[in-house]
Length: 305
Image (tube, rainbow, N blue to C red; front, side):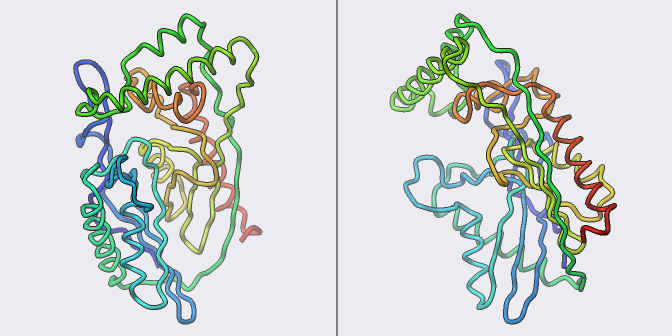
């Protein structure tokens, strides 16, 4: 059983400013506006799958709670009903943040409850599909690096202003210290790469499709931009696709080619914390081509059902 209902939580965070793109709010840019819900029914058990693209950091980086943020709190609400298991599947949220980011545990609880209510409302809709066929397919996509920088260019990169922190955190001395230590470590490691004394491991992005009845769960490792998932959803002939990020393994951010000239955290800074060097602007095309090929193969080969 599948439903799609209006829902607002995630918003595009790549805000344009006079000095470039920063982590902020860009509600005019593409962002998710629906909640996808599916349920699998077994004897004495209801398994609920629900998906929306959004970084789960309502609680904020200073929180010391062990928590899955708003998704886990939504699952907690859903599982108050005996025999129910909730699974939140994050969408392609590389450039999507919660509208109420960094608001603490109470706000995360509030949003978790609101999300659970939206799921319950979706479940009230009529409809169903007795088909329970399962099929799976996968592919590995190589994401090539940009040309390596010189040692002088590495020193210049280390000195550039970071976009990883919010404007209100820029004067925090403790945060400044942490960033300085992280950048110094990256610079030293990157010089070892350039000198040939440290290996630069190839970046492999796994594309995996799990089809359950009419639903195709399209998993992309790493953090693909929202627009990439939507292109795969709209351009495919498959009837119901949920593009998902953060699946199987982590290979860093996957921006759209259009966003490379604009720079910003995801394009210019993130790899210093989650990798070593950045992939080039062909990564979107490579992921799209592979995703379409895997979806097409799965839908056109009935022997895999």
